[in-house]
Image (cartoon, rainbow, N blue to C red; front, side, top):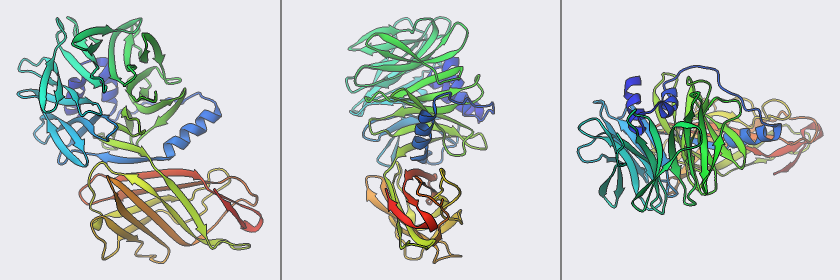
Length: 461
C-alpha cells in the first residue's frame, strides 16, 4: 500500500519536498505541533473546525484515492489507483467520476482545474520521464520546460496561467510559471528546491520550498514579493491551495513523520484534521470555502475528502419555568459530492447539545444509532432509534445539487444547565452511512441558548 501511494507522490513531483507530506498519509506517528497563537485565535480556529462537514471521497472500487483541487463549480480532480495497481487521473463532476489519462501515458494524475473546466496534470512517458499536459475541451496539449529532465503542472487559473515545476540535471524541482506560451522561473530566496502549488485569478501563487538546512517552508508570491508561510512551531509547512479571497490551505508537521491540515485566513491559522484520522493534508480551497484534502485512516490507508462549512440552527420547544425537559430540534444542511441512496442508510448521532462553556451535556444519551424507517425512499429518509422510537428521530431529504437538509428531533430531553444565564454553545455531530458510499461526518457548533435560575429557558440566538 505504501509503495502504491508513493506512486501518487511521484506523479505529483518526484521530490522529497512534496513527498514529505504525501508520505505522512501513510500513518506515521510523531507528536503533532500546537499553535502558539493567542486565545482569541485559538477559539476561532476551534469554531471553524467544528462547523465543517467532512464527506469521504473514494473512486468506486479503488483502494487509494488522492484528490488534488476543486474549482468554484465544485468540480474535483485527482488520481486513484485501481485494483491492478495502475494509476489514473479523475474528474468528479456532479457526483459522477470520469477517468482522465493522457493517451499512452502511465502514472497519471489530474492536478489542477479552473472554473472554465481546463485541467492540468502529469503523466509518465514510455521512458519513465514525468511530463505535463493541459486538457482543454477534450484536447490534450503537452507542456515541457525546455532543457528540463521532467515537468509537472500543478495549478491553473481562469486566465490560463499555469504553475508547476521542472527538474534539473540533479532531478531537483524548481518552480515555473507558464503564461502566454512563455516560461518564467519562480524560486523563493534561499531555496534549494521549490514547488509552486497553485495560482489564483489575482495572479497570487502559493507553494513550498526547501532551504539549505532541509527545512520546508510554505510561500506566497504576490506581485513579485515572496512571503514565507510557517505554521507556528512547526519545522515543516507546505502551502497547497489558494482562493481569490486569499485563504490558504496546506499541511504542517514535526520532522517528516506526520502531517496536519491548516487553513490560513486573515493571518489566523486553523488546524483542520479529518475526524479520527492519523494524518491530514489539505490540497485545495475554492471561493465558496469548500476544501479538499487527504487523510490516513487507522489502518494507514489513504482516502480523500471534501470539507464544507454548512448552515445550521436549532430551537427548544416547550421548556418553561421550573421545567427541565424539552423537545429539541436541530436542523441544517450538508453537501455530498457523490450521489446517495438514503433508503438503506444508517445515521449515528455521536454528540448533541454539548455545553463547552458551562458544564456537561445538555442532552444525555448519545451515541444514538438510527436506522431507516419503513417507507423511506431514495432521497427522503426518516430515521428512528428502534430501541427508543419516542426519544429521537431524524429526517434527511435531498434539496438538489448535492445539497441535503437534515432535521434531528429529541423528545423529553433532560436539560442540565448552569444556574445563571451564561452563553452556551450548541454542538451536534453525526455520521451518515449511505449504501455503497463513503461516510459523511457532520460536526457543527453554534451559540444557542442560555438559562437562568431553576433552569428557566430565557432566549435563543
